[in-house]
Length: 340
Ligand code: PEP
Ligand code: MN
Image (cartoon, rainbow, N blue to C red; front, side):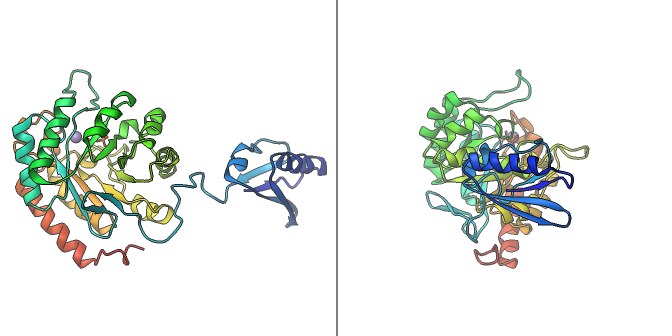
């Protein structure tokens, strides 16, 4: 941490800042130059966090030199691989996660699962507990939905990801699911994040609609600091003034995340755009930008879907996306080396 003092700071004010730093167990180095004094403080993250120098008399600016998320920050080159059964997410290819928005029943879920499995999906998705904006909208089948997802896994051999909407349901969901999803609306539900941090299941953390990159990584830090090392980040669009799509897909967060964290990143072009015809181009753009995976909504009868039908791909569109993704990934030589 660097503290820049005001040019007019008195010796007494500077000593007060130094004294506080030493009291907190920090090492202090004073440097004088260009008519001002700066203090470099060294110490553990915990000690630095305890310090609050902003606003002290004589202090102009406090700058952190290390990010406030020691576990989520990049420590080595390359992307961390999260293993989900035979799936190695972050291992160099593009993992395709596909399925309906909500689990609506056994037959539809199984037919969608079989369809996406035959077209290159390596993981299934489907909500059993749905966070809906309206309390009158379909809220999901709950436990019945989890059982249906397990049946779809049995049929296809593909693991599944499904959402946890509150702390109380985590134990139930982690019993059934391969990956537990924290939805965009819950990205800053800190007690939920803490509970997910205690889970032995990998977590897929979606970016909140108005979350900055630091907000997202601090939320990931909650899960990591609980002991759960397997965190997958998911960009799903943010809310902006643009109203031509449901959200604005912020692809520039991919290279920015790549720089700051080793955690793998999945892009969800379905919730980002809200429109079926926008999904494939944005999915491919995400692959080009370095996504480790895509999570897309697919439905065999989207006109009758209980949620998000308008953004769900028809199975043949998913087949096309899958083929194009493989071609593009190969063309970009998206192996572990090119992603560094
Ligand atoms: C979902 O993936 O089912 C979902 C509800 O997405 P989000 O949390 O991104 O809105
Ligand atoms: Mn949805």
